[in-house]
Image 1 (cartoon, rainbow, N blue to C red):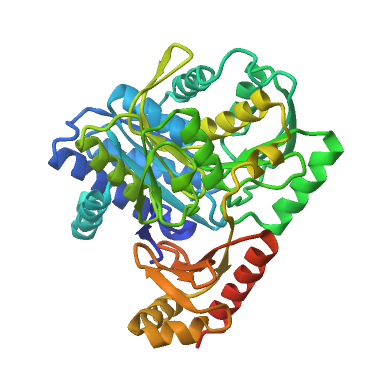
Image 2 (cartoon, helix red, strand yellow):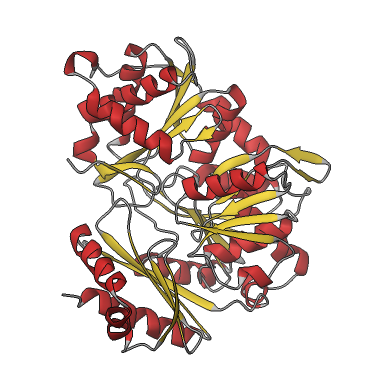
Length: 471
């Protein structure tokens, strides 16, 4: 069985998740909600999904299991994860999102939400333990149907997003929307048009395309770089499969890094505290008037970090990941309107905040990005890299300083290390290289920072080669 909790919910092969397995975890989640007092029999619970071929069957199995467990499922259909989360918060209802986010189409997953937001690592452990203890006779594997609430959920999210900027804030901009198979594709068009932008829909697909906004594929880059000059675009926007991670490319089709988008959004909101993983750019601390708290990679760790800050009585608290997914832990007032907290990854707020900055400055988006003068960062991953091999590599590097120095000798000398998540190494020349195994897939990621783009790309390629040739 391939199923495993990682940095963003339960993930695994679609064939392993269909039928009994999805019913098992939905039942375990229901029992966890009921046992912990987070829900009572008959309470509503929301189900959303992305556009993967396997998602409808998995959603139907979950609906049947949740009904059998005594809850009242409400079917929200295909919609962005932040839209589902916002609707759940408004109803004080738990939720399940059937999505594998950016991973390949033969995989899928489930994201779990309590009535007050995303589950944490303690919830994950409880759900996994309950799933392991459930007996066959306690499990319903019948597919079910439920009342459709997709219209209400999408409308609530649309209303939120048209309240973030001033009227006609994007008038005069020509923006492409790479629609592919993201559930955010139609809402992007509607929201951008509301703000006065001329919108060009691009690349819509009826088959699922896995778009990773943190490690953009050569095929996606080729598309973006062709579309931008072909249509005379000021920017191109998109998202991953479930619409919680932004992809924003400039007028040349070059994507902006997610952590830069997160930084721009933090300044847009006048944040007081920013919580972000260790993988986000090291220049963030000096680029805004806010305190920065670093965490492990994954929204549960960012959310836990925001909760710690809130417990200190801080206000204007936000979080973002290196992929650009943005979270708000406190209310914010924009243009006289109060925007409710949304402590789960969202792609709309960071995209709109960055486009608004471009429009207000009257500069090309590439110029807006360059003005921040952050260290140049690059990241990529080796796919089909066995988790056993990843574990062996990390164990070897952590075993001794001499092991680490010998491994990194081709790229530089070791100055210092951080073990917050994976192994991040600062070299004596000021560059950084960070190795991190995926928490839920056979992948090994490498992140680097350097003084310029050529140096960063060279270091990234060297780092990937070191990983590839290990053992």
